[in-house]
Image (cartoon, rainbow, N blue to C red; front, top):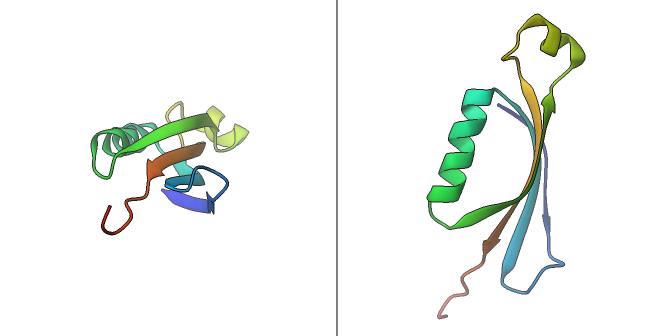
Length: 82
């Protein structure tokens, strides 16, 4: 899995954390990642998800080649003492 960009936005509600990431990953690894994100703690939800072949050549060479995935995750920040 190769992570190419991650940014956190602060335009959401004061206690919300929004993370946008773009990565290259296999289909099996993507399935495992999504499962961990949505069932693990802290509680995170996937706000948006875009999946496409990493490159046209990768798609032609193997049907289960690397994928380029862009996703947005949302979670809540727990303030100390709250």
